[in-house]
Amino acid sequence: MRLGTLLTTALLSATLATSSLVATPSYAAAAGKEPRAFKDKVVIGHSVQGRPITAWHRGETGGPKVLLIATMHGNEGAPRTILRTLRSGRQIHGINLWVVPVYNPDGYAAHTRKNAHGVDLNRNFSYHWADLDGGYESGPRAGSEPETRAMMRFLRKIRPDRIISFHQPLNGVDTDTKNQRFSVRVARALHLQRKAFTCGGVCHGTMTGWFNHHFRGSALTAEYPAHPGRRRMAVIAPRQVLSIWGATRGKG
Ligand SMILES: [Zn+2]
Image 1 (tube, rainbow, N blue to C red):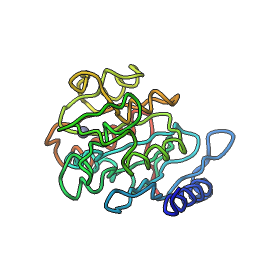
Image 2: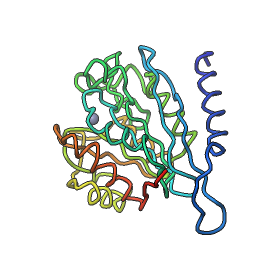
Image 3: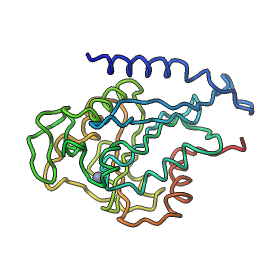
Image 4: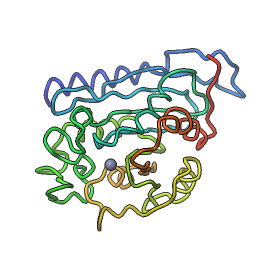
């Protein structure tokens, strides 16, 4: 294990350990334990070119643990605005929320789908990994990319109940997934159609496939169109996302 990895892991552990102690919400709990609010920022790892991959922790204890990921493909950046809206502003209630607005920061900087090694991160995970070339270049081996390893570590650490991975431009929510009820709820809430994203055959090495196979929780891909519109991303979709879990924003 490299020193950088050790430091990152130590930082993550320390931050996660203290994150539930950070803030005291100004409202009374309905019953039993009072929820505690989160307002933390964690660097979960670094890209090939050394850019930080940052996760923000929002919401409060007690609600379902949800992770939202955007910009896994660097040229699909519009949905990151949903996550940026959710990480800022008023306190969120009823959900234990993590957001990673820019999972592939090198690709985002270069406006490319892939990372700086030319690897499609959504083909680099170890579940059903295959040696793919061209548009879906899967890397020299499963988990070869630092971005992939960072997300695997992070997911093992926080173990979300639900993950939504936002992409473009296929304009739909995946039906070829582990939890159909979750797929239906997300599609209705986000006003997206339900579609089978078959990856042109078998999906090899995807993040959602890896998570769904190894964890109890459910991960789902949601694709917006190529040009979803600024207001939809900044104002409408953040509310729609919270509505999936009945979560709300407070005054403070
Ligand atoms: Zn994508």
